Length: 249
Image (cartoon, rainbow, N blue to C red):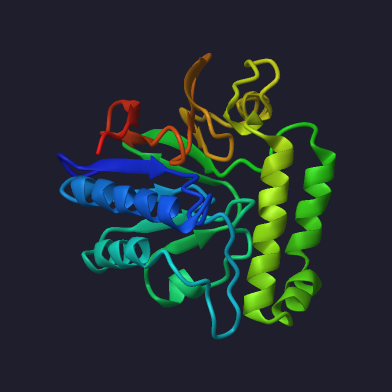
């Protein structure tokens, strides 16, 4: 890392919910945050669920979110590497952001080294024990045939249909994503402990679960980034320490 530079991590913006006005307000806050960190960001990691739904037709992408896309493009044009992970709500990202030279897309976990420290980065969906129904559903959605069949739907119908099921799923789960279940029950904590049996990881950083938390796991540290719906939290690594912070507009 260069002197005075930092690595930033954020996730779970879920732009598009609960309505246009609220989403637009959050998007403006995100752009303000990106503008503030611009002075010292060396690399930016966005760990999934940037959008509550995203699908790339061959010539169409969902409308909206133009301020975030424009700001990310501005940062990318200044030479700042941007890393975008797919989450369970935007797993149908394809290559739009890479074609527009905004950022690199990751569909699996990534291990990176900064200043001699090993970072394990992932959105978090489908990792750890249990939740077999979701893991099966994810395999179905990632099947090329499923994606192709959805692309046959008119965007006006397909995107509205996806939003309907997304909202229905959110109503059924309620606020459970924002509740910490304890170190012995959180599947991402259990996953991190399993990884530590074979990999010398210094820092685990995940999204997906909407609570912000910073834990110590023996010789390693675990951060769940929280969301930008209620918590507005992010993590920053200055080359020596990793901190979980709350953004104040």
